[in-house]
Every structure is written in C-alpha cells, then in structure tokens.
Length: 193
Ligand code: S3P
Image (cartoon, rainbow, N blue to C red; front, side):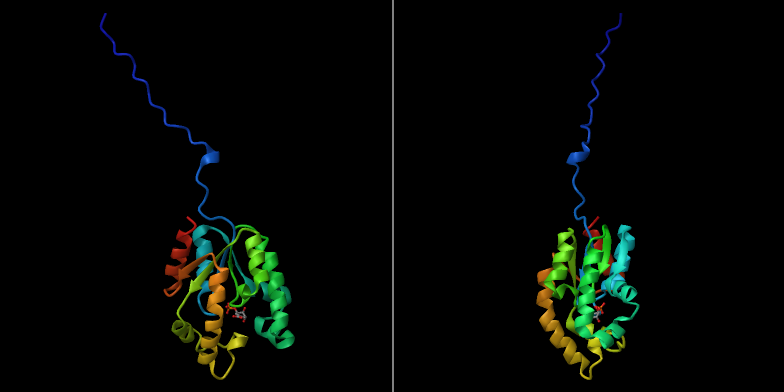
C-alpha cells in the first residue's frame, strides 16, 4: 500500500465576533456650524448624500414651523424671537437620529443648543473659512437680516472675531472649509466612513 501523507489540517480563520468589531468611527448626528456663508447647507447636503443620511437645514426647519421666512421672523419678533424658535428647533432636530444638520450661523453660540446636540451624541464640526472669503461670498446677500447694514464688511469682521472662538469651543472637530463645497463635503464624509 502506498504511503499516504496525513491530510493537512486546514487552518481556520478566526471567526469574527460581531460584538468585538470596530465601532463606526463616529456615529450620531453630524452638525455643521460656522459663520454665515461658510457652506454649512451646501456642504451638509452633499455630506448627507455621501453618507446616505437624512439632511436637515435648521433655518428651513424654523421657517417651515413658523410659516415665515427668517427675515420675516426677525422683522416681526426681533432677534430674540428668532433665537427662541431656533432653540426649540435645535432641540427637536437634535433628538432625531442619523441626521446631517446644517445649523444657522448663530445656533451654537447658545450653550443650550450645543448641549441639546451633544446630549444626543452629535458631533459638531466647525467649517473654518477665512474672513476675507466670507466677506466676498456675502457681499451681495439680501436674505440675512444681520447683514442688511451699511458697512457690511466691517460688521462681518466684528462678528467673525467675536464668534470664531465660540465656534471652536462648541465644535468637536474643525474642518478647513476654504474650498468648493464638493471638496469640503468629501473631507467631512471621510471622517465618518
Ligand atoms: C444667523 C445666520 C443665519 C440665520 C439667521 C442668523 C446668524 O443662518 O440663522 O439669519 O446669527 O449668524 P446662515 O448661517 O445659514 O446664514
């Protein structure tokens, strides 16, 4: 009888146990914050597509709930009225899951709004765009109540200086937003893939 080699034992790959799989790097809502004109909505919409998530623009949400535009709310109820609606909206949207949320330029200046997002595990990203680029992007704006002033460039510069430290403080991550929205959206999406 011919000598037969004993059958080689097949090496089994260790089975993957689902409960020890690496968690997704970041889960929870993604909230984009930053100055007016930094691209929160245009970037956010694209990020939502890339990550197959739902998109919510907080200003549009407020407008829908109020049945008025942001400009109309400012005119009728003043900035204080708008901020109260914004907090209500932030709390409602923050409680939803798996969203990409474009906040308004003033949303994360209120610690209560930041808390509402963080309480539900959101990741807040600051889209960092240099002030000169914002001044350029906003020079013809007719929609934003805070910018309907004679010396717009100066108002932008002053607001920017006050707000940037607050955006940084509220955010978990700062993303360079000084590029076309498609490029910035890819940068953002890459953090969550
Ligand atoms: C505001 C920014 C606006 C809007 C409102 C107030 C602000 O949103 O919420 O006019 O205080 O910076 P955008 O940043 O989307 O323009």
